[in-house]
Length: 175
Ligand code: HEM
Image (tube, rainbow, N blue to C red; front, side, top):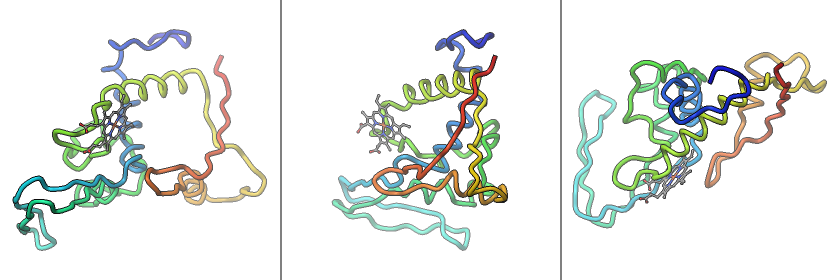
């Protein structure tokens, strides 16, 4: 996409690595699905790392309900350096694929993943190439620190999904 008026094509997608990194970092910090319930279809075991650096194996009888705690994994400092920080660049190099599960994993992982990544990246790229996007200045928040502003803008409610509370942005058309 060389000019502001051009539409990104599917072939351009592999070049939008930064947009995809921003999209991923947003999904890591604010996963739309925070909890994925599963039921074991057969007797099995689950081996996980423990705090002593070893492994613990749990028996999982058929019918056991297990929740994949998406946010718990996405904020785990064992896999993510400074997990509370918005750092898209963490997705530009090598990153822990198994610790990023906004679309779940396995046979029933999200069927729309590729579609949603492509659409999300295309829309974001078009928006930032056409508009300068700023947080709206409001008198009642004058004087707040960067950290206070970050906390205010990124505050979310967590129910079935993650919902932003209030994100007052100003879009100014680029020439
Ligand atoms: C950011 C956007 C999206 C997120 C975070 C997301 C996340 C998820 C998650 C967590 C699951 C559950 C997987 C499991 O049970 O282990 C799922 C399933 C599914 N998603 Fe998405 N999804 C997104 C967008 C979409 C879109 C755009 C479509 C369709 C065009 C879609 C279609 C599906 C389907 C069909 C399933 C069921 C897969 C199955 O049970 O085999 N999703 N998604």
